Length: 350
Ligand SMILES: *Cc1c(COP(=O)(O)O)cnc(C)c1O
Image 1 (cartoon, rainbow, N blue to C red):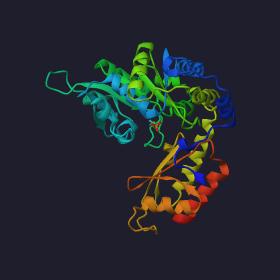
Image 2: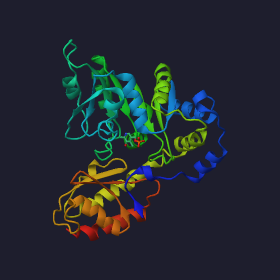
Image 3: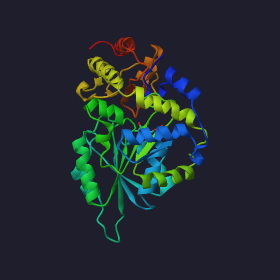
Image 4: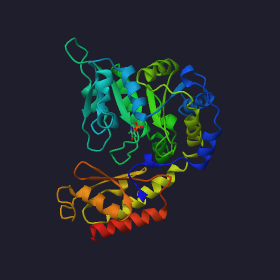
C-alpha cells in the first residue's frame, strides 16, 4: 500500500532503532533521564529559546500552552480551520475552560486587521481575549507555510493588546525548508512553540514544547496534571534526537514530490487544485465529481478514496468535498507516479 493519509504513518529509521536500543535512560518525572535532557536542550537550541519539554503528543503540547496562557472563560483567537480547534477534542474547553474565537479566512492566513478586530475591548462586561494561536504549516490549508513577515505582524498586534501567542508548529521544519529560513526565525516572538517529531521527521512518538525557562517549568507541572509524565522515556527521546539531527533537510524531497503529485492531479477532470499553492508536503484538493461510481450513500470524495484503495493507494477524505494526500519519508518517485496513474484511472482523462 502507498500510504498518503498522513506523515504520521512514518516508521522509525534504522538509525533511530539503533539509538533507541542503546539509549541511556532514567526516571524523567524525577528529571533523571539523560537522553530526554539532551533532546530538550537540542530542541531549545534549534528554536533559539531557553528551554523545551518533551511531550507525548502535539495535542498535549498545544493544550499545555493553552492552559497556561488562558483562564476559564477567556477567549483564544484562531484561524477557523486550525488543528487546535478542530482536531483536539474540544480540549481547550474541556481542560482549560477556554473559548475559541475562530476566524474564517479565504487563504488560511489571518491578517493583522482580523486579529485586531477579534480582540474584545478590556471592559468589565466583555469576555477577555488572552491568546492568539498560529499554525505553521497550516495542515488543512494544504500545508501552507506562514511567512516570517506576516507572523511578525500578527505577533505585534497580539502583544499590543496584551495577548500571548502560541505557535502550533507541528510542521515548522517543513515551513522553514519551504521558505528558505530557519524554524527559529519562524517562531521568533511567539511566547510558546510546539513542534512534532512524529510527523515528517519520522520519530515514532513525541513532540516538543519550547519557550522561556519559567514557562517550561510551569509546562512540566501541567504535563503531569494532564497525565503526560513519562518515566524511562529516553528510548523515545533517542529517536527524537535522530529525527532532529538527520531528518530535517530531506523534507525538501517530500515537498518536491507533493508538488509533482499536485501538478498531475490538477490535470484530471473534477480536481479543483492550484498546484502553485502546494509548497510543502500536503496536497488538499476539492473533487467536483458527483458522477463517480461507488457507494451512493458516500460523498464523491469518499468514493474516490475507496476507489484509490482498490489501486493500492491510501488517502484521506475531509468533509464532503476534500481529499488530502501527504508525502513523507516512505513515499518514492515511483509511488507518486503510481498514485497519478491510479487517479487517472479512477477519474478518467480530461
Ligand atoms: C498533527 C498535528 C498536531 C498534533 O497532533 P498529535 O496527533 O496530537 O501529535 C498539532 N497541530 C497540527 C497542525 C498537526 O498537524
